Image (cartoon, each protein chain N blue to C red):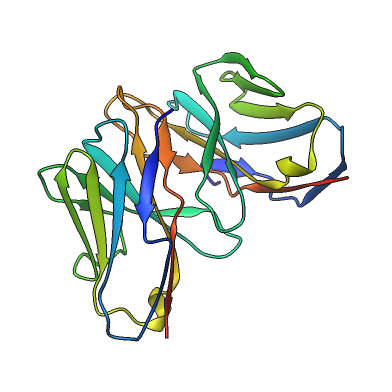
Length: 115
Length: 112
Protein backbone atom coordinates (compact mmCIF):
# COMPACT_ATOMS: atom_id res chain seq x y z
CA UNK A 1 0.00 0.00 0.00
CA UNK A 2 0.90 3.67 -0.21
CA UNK A 3 3.61 4.68 2.23
CA UNK A 4 4.64 8.09 3.47
CA UNK A 5 7.99 8.35 5.20
CA UNK A 6 8.81 11.18 7.59
CA UNK A 7 12.24 12.00 8.94
CA UNK A 8 13.51 12.56 11.56
CA UNK A 9 11.17 10.96 14.06
CA UNK A 10 12.56 12.87 17.00
CA UNK A 11 14.46 16.15 17.33
CA UNK A 12 15.75 17.82 20.47
CA UNK A 13 17.55 21.10 20.00
CA UNK A 14 18.31 24.45 21.55
CA UNK A 15 16.18 27.54 21.21
CA UNK A 16 17.08 29.55 18.12
CA UNK A 17 17.95 26.53 15.99
CA UNK A 18 16.25 25.90 12.65
CA UNK A 19 14.94 22.38 12.13
CA UNK A 20 14.11 20.70 8.84
CA UNK A 21 11.59 17.84 8.60
CA UNK A 22 11.28 15.74 5.46
CA UNK A 23 8.19 14.01 4.11
CA UNK A 24 8.51 11.52 1.27
CA UNK A 25 5.96 9.52 -0.66
CA UNK A 26 7.74 6.20 -1.21
CA UNK A 27 5.70 4.45 -3.89
CA UNK A 28 3.56 7.16 -5.45
CA UNK A 29 3.84 10.71 -6.66
CA UNK A 30 2.25 13.47 -4.65
CA UNK A 31 1.68 16.88 -6.17
CA UNK A 32 0.08 17.90 -2.89
CA UNK A 33 1.17 17.16 0.64
CA UNK A 34 -0.15 18.45 3.95
CA UNK A 35 1.54 19.46 7.17
CA UNK A 36 -0.20 19.12 10.52
CA UNK A 37 0.59 19.92 14.08
CA UNK A 38 -0.80 17.88 16.95
CA UNK A 39 -0.84 18.80 20.63
CA UNK A 40 -1.12 16.10 23.31
CA UNK A 41 -4.54 14.42 23.36
CA UNK A 42 -5.80 16.72 20.62
CA UNK A 43 -6.75 16.17 17.02
CA UNK A 44 -4.62 17.20 14.07
CA UNK A 45 -4.44 20.86 13.16
CA UNK A 46 -3.74 21.60 9.51
CA UNK A 47 -0.89 24.07 9.13
CA UNK A 48 -0.37 24.27 5.40
CA UNK A 49 -0.83 22.64 2.03
CA UNK A 50 2.38 21.97 0.15
CA UNK A 51 2.13 22.21 -3.64
CA UNK A 52 4.78 20.79 -5.94
CA UNK A 53 6.41 23.55 -7.96
CA UNK A 54 4.49 26.40 -6.37
CA UNK A 55 4.05 28.22 -3.09
CA UNK A 56 2.51 26.54 -0.11
CA UNK A 57 -0.92 27.59 1.13
CA UNK A 58 -0.96 28.38 4.83
CA UNK A 59 -3.92 28.15 7.19
CA UNK A 60 -5.04 31.22 9.04
CA UNK A 61 -2.82 32.03 11.98
CA UNK A 62 0.18 30.02 10.75
CA UNK A 63 3.30 32.15 10.26
CA UNK A 64 4.73 31.65 6.79
CA UNK A 65 8.16 32.95 7.75
CA UNK A 66 8.27 30.69 10.76
CA UNK A 67 7.26 27.49 9.02
CA UNK A 68 8.94 27.34 5.63
CA UNK A 69 7.64 24.72 3.23
CA UNK A 70 9.37 23.53 0.08
CA UNK A 71 7.92 20.94 -2.31
CA UNK A 72 10.71 20.60 -4.84
CA UNK A 73 9.80 17.22 -6.31
CA UNK A 74 6.81 14.93 -6.73
CA UNK A 75 7.93 12.79 -3.81
CA UNK A 76 9.42 15.21 -1.30
CA UNK A 77 8.15 18.08 0.81
CA UNK A 78 10.11 19.71 3.62
CA UNK A 79 9.00 21.79 6.58
CA UNK A 80 11.60 24.03 8.19
CA UNK A 81 10.85 25.48 11.60
CA UNK A 82 13.01 28.59 11.64
CA UNK A 83 14.55 29.98 14.82
CA UNK A 84 12.58 27.51 16.88
CA UNK A 85 11.47 28.38 20.41
CA UNK A 86 10.02 26.24 23.19
CA UNK A 87 6.46 27.09 22.13
CA UNK A 88 7.18 25.41 18.78
CA UNK A 89 7.66 22.09 20.57
CA UNK A 90 5.01 19.75 19.21
CA UNK A 91 4.27 16.67 17.12
CA UNK A 92 4.44 17.49 13.40
CA UNK A 93 2.87 15.12 10.88
CA UNK A 94 2.73 15.14 7.10
CA UNK A 95 0.28 13.43 4.78
CA UNK A 96 -0.14 12.85 1.07
CA UNK A 97 -3.07 11.65 -1.03
CA UNK A 98 -2.74 8.59 -3.25
CA UNK A 99 -2.98 8.69 -7.01
CA UNK A 100 -6.43 10.00 -7.84
CA UNK A 101 -6.21 12.07 -4.68
CA UNK A 102 -8.07 9.87 -2.22
CA UNK A 103 -7.41 8.86 0.50
CA UNK A 104 -4.55 10.49 2.41
CA UNK A 105 -1.74 8.57 4.05
CA UNK A 106 0.22 9.90 6.96
CA UNK A 107 3.84 9.82 7.97
CA UNK A 108 4.79 8.63 11.45
CA UNK A 109 5.32 12.15 12.69
CA UNK A 110 8.24 14.13 14.09
CA UNK A 111 8.39 14.93 17.77
CA UNK A 112 10.12 18.29 18.13
CA UNK A 113 11.39 19.44 21.50
CA UNK A 114 13.00 22.86 21.83
CA UNK A 115 14.96 23.43 25.01
CA UNK B 1 -21.71 23.77 15.79
CA UNK B 2 -18.46 22.04 14.85
CA UNK B 3 -18.26 20.58 11.36
CA UNK B 4 -17.50 17.10 12.68
CA UNK B 5 -18.55 15.87 16.11
CA UNK B 6 -16.97 12.80 17.67
CA UNK B 7 -17.33 11.61 21.24
CA UNK B 8 -13.79 11.69 22.68
CA UNK B 9 -14.51 8.91 25.15
CA UNK B 10 -12.55 7.37 26.70
CA UNK B 11 -14.16 4.06 25.80
CA UNK B 12 -13.13 0.91 27.66
CA UNK B 13 -14.32 -2.55 26.59
CA UNK B 14 -13.39 -6.16 27.36
CA UNK B 15 -11.52 -8.23 24.81
CA UNK B 16 -13.87 -9.78 22.27
CA UNK B 17 -16.49 -7.03 22.52
CA UNK B 18 -18.04 -5.30 19.53
CA UNK B 19 -17.03 -1.65 19.44
CA UNK B 20 -19.08 1.06 17.81
CA UNK B 21 -17.50 4.43 17.04
CA UNK B 22 -19.46 7.28 15.52
CA UNK B 23 -19.20 10.74 14.03
CA UNK B 24 -21.79 13.24 12.93
CA UNK B 25 -21.17 16.08 10.56
CA UNK B 26 -22.91 19.20 9.38
CA UNK B 27 -21.61 19.76 5.82
CA UNK B 28 -23.74 17.76 3.39
CA UNK B 29 -21.14 18.34 0.66
CA UNK B 30 -18.66 15.90 2.20
CA UNK B 31 -18.12 12.99 -0.19
CA UNK B 32 -15.21 10.93 1.17
CA UNK B 33 -15.17 9.43 4.64
CA UNK B 34 -12.21 7.89 6.39
CA UNK B 35 -11.35 6.24 9.65
CA UNK B 36 -7.83 6.43 10.99
CA UNK B 37 -6.25 4.65 13.93
CA UNK B 38 -3.53 6.45 15.83
CA UNK B 39 -1.29 4.81 18.37
CA UNK B 40 0.47 6.98 20.90
CA UNK B 41 3.39 8.92 19.40
CA UNK B 42 2.66 7.65 15.89
CA UNK B 43 1.02 9.09 12.79
CA UNK B 44 -2.57 8.15 11.89
CA UNK B 45 -2.96 4.87 10.00
CA UNK B 46 -5.74 4.57 7.42
CA UNK B 47 -8.23 1.86 8.40
CA UNK B 48 -11.23 2.37 6.18
CA UNK B 49 -12.19 4.67 3.36
CA UNK B 50 -15.65 5.09 1.86
CA UNK B 51 -17.03 7.20 -0.91
CA UNK B 52 -20.60 8.47 -0.36
CA UNK B 53 -23.21 6.37 1.45
CA UNK B 54 -22.95 2.66 2.06
CA UNK B 55 -21.12 -0.03 3.95
CA UNK B 56 -17.62 -1.36 3.60
CA UNK B 57 -16.12 -4.35 5.37
CA UNK B 58 -12.49 -5.30 5.85
CA UNK B 59 -11.77 -8.16 8.19
CA UNK B 60 -13.00 -7.23 11.66
CA UNK B 61 -13.78 -3.67 10.62
CA UNK B 62 -16.98 -2.32 9.07
CA UNK B 63 -17.52 1.28 8.06
CA UNK B 64 -20.97 2.70 7.47
CA UNK B 65 -21.92 6.04 5.96
CA UNK B 66 -25.44 7.45 6.06
CA UNK B 67 -25.35 10.73 4.19
CA UNK B 68 -29.06 11.39 4.71
CA UNK B 69 -28.45 11.47 8.47
CA UNK B 70 -24.91 12.89 8.20
CA UNK B 71 -23.70 10.04 10.35
CA UNK B 72 -20.79 7.65 9.97
CA UNK B 73 -19.81 4.64 12.03
CA UNK B 74 -16.94 2.23 12.49
CA UNK B 75 -17.60 -1.18 13.98
CA UNK B 76 -14.84 -3.40 15.33
CA UNK B 77 -15.75 -7.04 15.87
CA UNK B 78 -13.90 -9.35 18.25
CA UNK B 79 -11.90 -6.45 19.61
CA UNK B 80 -8.32 -7.13 20.66
CA UNK B 81 -5.98 -5.37 23.10
CA UNK B 82 -3.94 -4.34 20.04
CA UNK B 83 -6.96 -2.28 18.91
CA UNK B 84 -6.36 0.07 21.84
CA UNK B 85 -5.67 3.43 20.22
CA UNK B 86 -7.30 6.71 19.29
CA UNK B 87 -9.72 6.47 16.37
CA UNK B 88 -10.18 9.54 14.20
CA UNK B 89 -12.94 10.05 11.69
CA UNK B 90 -12.13 12.33 8.77
CA UNK B 91 -13.92 13.53 5.68
CA UNK B 92 -13.49 15.83 2.72
CA UNK B 93 -15.26 17.31 -0.25
CA UNK B 94 -13.37 15.33 -2.88
CA UNK B 95 -12.58 16.59 -6.35
CA UNK B 96 -9.69 19.04 -6.20
CA UNK B 97 -10.33 19.75 -2.51
CA UNK B 98 -8.23 17.31 -0.52
CA UNK B 99 -8.36 18.99 2.87
CA UNK B 100 -9.52 16.66 5.61
CA UNK B 101 -11.84 17.71 8.39
CA UNK B 102 -11.25 15.58 11.47
CA UNK B 103 -13.27 14.60 14.47
CA UNK B 104 -11.56 15.01 17.83
CA UNK B 105 -10.82 11.29 18.07
CA UNK B 106 -12.10 8.58 20.42
CA UNK B 107 -9.65 6.92 22.80
CA UNK B 108 -10.39 3.19 22.94
CA UNK B 109 -8.96 0.72 25.43
CA UNK B 110 -9.57 -3.00 24.99
CA UNK B 111 -8.90 -4.85 28.22
CA UNK B 112 -7.56 -8.43 28.10
